[in-house]
Image 1 (cartoon, rainbow, N blue to C red):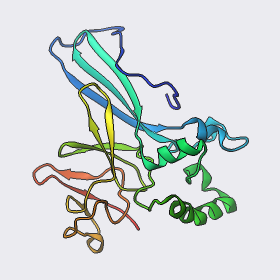
Image 2: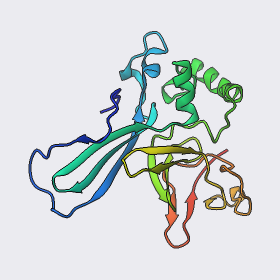
Image 3: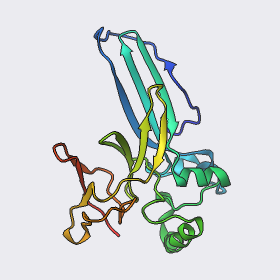
Image 4: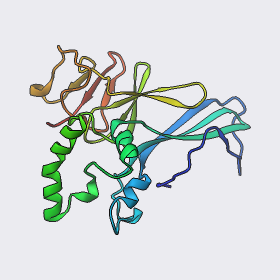
Amino acid sequence: TAPTHSLHHNLPLPLLSGTLPHDIQGLFLRIGPNPTHSHTHSHTHSHTHSLHKHDGHGMIHSIRVNNASNLTYSNQYIHTPRYLTELLYNRTLFLNTRDKKGLVGIVKTLLAPLTLEYLGLTHTTHGAANMNLVVLGNRIYACDEGSAPFAIHWNDDNTFDSKGYELSDSKAHSSTPSLTHSSTHSSTLPLPMSSHPVIDIKTQIMYYTGFS
């Protein structure tokens, strides 16, 4: 359960009960928000239990099944600009869901764009990538509710490389006609994407709702 501050790579998992088919092979992935020490210690009186369930950097948990007797577990943070920035400063710098309360929350929300500008980020590249995983082409994308999808590449050794915000809007279309930009080829989407897009398996185009 989150938060976990232990990172594992190919940790053997014992099968406590039952059996698995002898020829089963595959990879199970689960993503979720995992608060770091900066989330729980950057403010006086801040504790893990005060965090909203959506607060925390994206962490991918994986179980690799090679055969009925070989199961391994790995977990790894997604190295988004948000994660790397807070790791560098060792404190929370971005607006979290728990911060959006009362008059202080209104002030923090109004100041958030200035923080992004100072850090060189935009409204599509500041996300935590912690809500959902989707597969498009040869990439896995981590999505949240406030930025563009963040691409990762899975490696054979059960690690992954954080690739960045590389999805162009030539492969993703907003469901709002006025916000569809299918003729451009920007390196990132023009607006944040919802965390649960739909992919047309025939055309490999991703459809989503978003807002600016």
